[in-house]
Image (tube, rainbow, N blue to C red; front, side):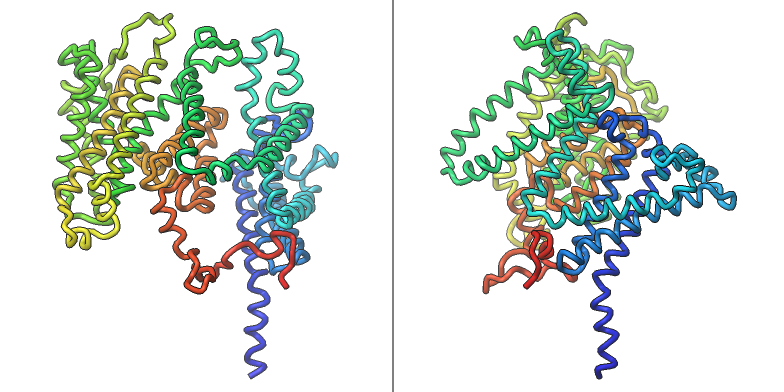
Length: 606
């Protein structure tokens, strides 16, 4: 009996270490991947902190530290095991890069035939040739493994820190990386002011931060973190009665609204110094965010509340855009020189009609079949838009051009271009958000939620499935049509290249990442999915979707309920964590520890 039980005992002892090995292999694959796709080599000359670390080096360093942190969390309980697990994970990660150096320098396998970025310059970076003064990079093949052990150990130490110290370090590193990446956004306006030129050159290099700037950023983050921990404003507000919470929220919302309204205006008109002027590019980005907020709020009704997955949502966006393009257009395809403000209601009504046309044939379809049916509808609209059949009406592949702006002003006027659409889009998004909120809290909104939970039970309780589903499709289409109308006015044209499947996928991502059924979640999701890449990832156009995918995976892993989930969504995602009748925590999924290991807070299990 004892002999039979011994193998099981060893398996149990090796179980956590096996997880450490697997995570080490995973991070080794990540390090190899980011190297071979060209991220490390391309950004080796892109400074993050001048004369200290480049962006390419920072990617590898953060990968090694993250590997060590995860290895420490997966190791058996205890500080010693945590450090050993972290170092082991870091060693495997670095060994993967060492293997890449060896394979890249051998004639047996020419990696450049398969990966053009596997160049000698990349291997010089990985082997540390600039530090070790090596004649060939293969002589330093051991360098990544040794550095990986060190970085893994650092990650393990981070896992042993108390929670507050860990959050402070994460905030400091995140702020340093963010300021280094986007330093030009702050540096260029400051250089235009004589009084700020010296300060800009002191804090910012040509690309990235100076050492002085990095120190200043760290000090500011430390002070801000200390003040936040001392005051704890969020906890203080939550403890206030509802009336006092509203009294605090009103002035903060008012200040935020004033800032949002002044963003696109030139600094002189807004009454601010010139270095506060952000320019029309920011206005264009915020207008795009508002457009996607409209579509996100529409899909939030269809998917977030009613649970009806619509992968052809871009079709309603296209209908609204083409309706506004045809009616007020002054080009050859214009059918009526209506003013923009009169064409908007017509575009919304047309999109609603198409919502009914889509909704009626698929009312009885559920699940994956519903997604396929809506996807087919979106493709039908795209093919019709590009076909010769409707070319005399909507222009075919060329689309409709010369869509006038809502207000006809000279090009030199501050309200020309994207600025006026900025305000139109903001007002439209605000109106739609108010309507969506009222709908969610209404009897119709509760009927949508009932359908999402169980259609059969909802029907048994008296919910009219045909009417309720049709209203969901119709109202969701109306919001998307309004977004399409503003899009056509923003760019002055509409063509079939804008009717892409990835637009529907982006809107679905906005709803899910923000939090299904949550109106603030849709706004934050649009900022994260559309605004941040548009404003800050233009420099990384080649790797935009790579960074995009990594961020989405991280959010879905850390916040599966969404960034700002609704109350119901939060309860559904964390129902296994609710306390039982005896007050003990829930069991959770198989293999889940139910929380961080004891050594994560710096103490060992008793």
